[in-house]
Image (cartoon, rainbow, N blue to C red; front, side, top):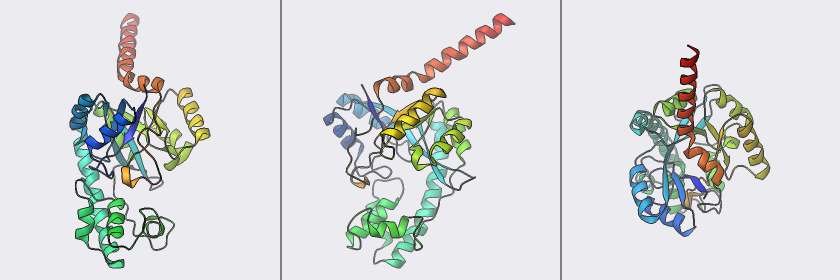
Length: 292
């Protein structure tokens, strides 16, 4: 048993609905998945119910946006199995509003440069809790301005290296604040795609801030890199997870759900993590009483 623990639906910046994702997982022979929409827990309960009907286990999850105040870079922290997901709603709302404000500026800039309307961009985001770069590109393709989601026009508008980019960075919550919020909700905090978030240096940095694990298997990491990440996780008592970061039509390359997964051993470690922590705490408390 393995699981793809990084999937996005139409609720954030994926192109497929919850039912379609679960149907695809079943057809691909993937028996465990996690829906990890950006700053959105709205599909968690529904996904679990639909998954049970189709023989697919759905692990509750969310991909929370955070800001590294030192580098100014946006970091993504995956949260799994929160005991009190309602405690994350405030953070999700705060992040969502920050993204909305940034998206509005980018929409205006895109409309000033190309013959595309804000209404069309919003229509391309129908069903999502926010508007993402993929939705802007979708609208530009509808207008015939671009011929692909991630081609020349995308690089011009959204590459940090482009002098003509229209990027506006949302004012997300600090990394430490997000990690603490996950723990307060009884969740497990995993650093998403480390190779896109500063590499091994960031892994060491955020481990010191309290993350419980790192995403080892991901399209951004080749076999050698994944091996290095797994070795670091084992040596430092961190969990290791994996997933395809599936976005459907909005994938950056040909990729299907289940192409990157969390192996059976690591999946069991994740699902048993909190029970193990509770046993350890109970043991420490018992030893403390005996010593006292």
